[in-house]
Image (cartoon, rainbow, N blue to C red; front, side):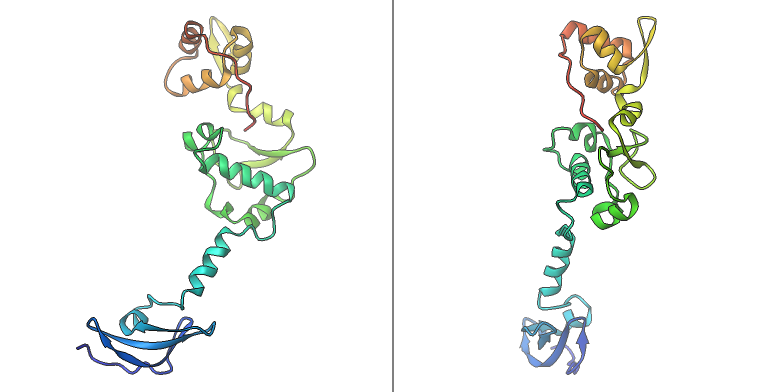
Length: 214
């Protein structure tokens, strides 16, 4: 039997040891009262090792704090926050392959929408969230509120390629050859030259796709 230690009146985070509650399974048990009023038995070793913090209410409150939107939902900026987070973290999202699927991350600081608001401010009318470096992450210093025209200047598919002796970006190549700009960029990212991507596209007959804003 382990050596008994009197824990009466001692606090362990939210739990206060009231009285010893017996010995079983090679453990000494104590009857404890949580700050919320609930009483339960807890192994003495678990208390002293800091593994028990409450009756369970603390863990529940911590979880709710992580998943709540803190009253932010409904605001224009929150919708942008939510959409960007989904693009990076939800494989079921329609454009995940262009974001999370190719390594674009949503920074840990912005997991809390209040930090996002503190860094970005309210979303101005007619603007949306834009990454300055289209290959960079959603994080402070690489994001801004921008108009559609401003975003187009930095869009990933605006990179320029040498194709049949001409310098074209992916959108121009898409219009010129009737191919998908997204697929051209995807093929180039996989290691092909733009020329090879165009030639394969013409053989396979890709359809031109409507581009989604970053």
